[in-house]
Image 1 (cartoon, rainbow, N blue to C red):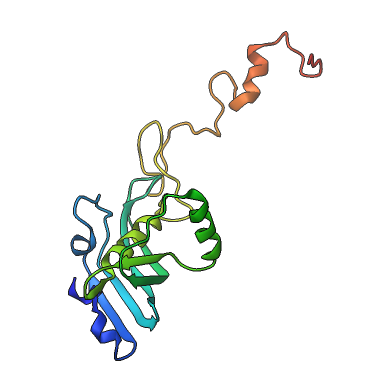
Image 2 (image 1 turned 90 degrees about the vertical axis):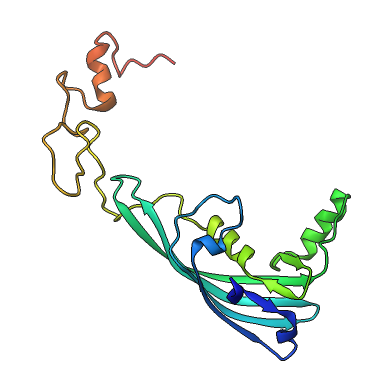
Length: 194
């Protein structure tokens, strides 16, 4: 992951260009759950805005998922614009909730500053955090995915099955809640007792 580690000394000479392609196993922190990612490309520019360092760039790559409707293997291509701010030193710790609220109000509109120690800024952790937070919560192989038949399990995208669907009335002539009238004939829908 050396392509994601920027020496602070290189930033003294001006902006630093980053263009690194990193496989998930190198990007994922120890103990973190696997995301099923392909190679992630991190591109952008790190500049100095004293006392901070700002990275403006993008993450591109592919998530590998199963479709939530038909379970087919699906690739979800992503492109995320990112702005990360770094500052050398230890993050300030505040025990007073009121001062934390004041700090939040003064920093509104700014990105959260990440603090680092040592002679390098590592883009690996913020890249991983972005990929986790922006991962799709629902995946479809296509917008019109018909899913699996709940009765026989056939993939309705590949071929229709002969099972009754929700649109077909069952043997009682019911389709959804409209069948309640047949179950309770003594109740007149026009005679509402509230």
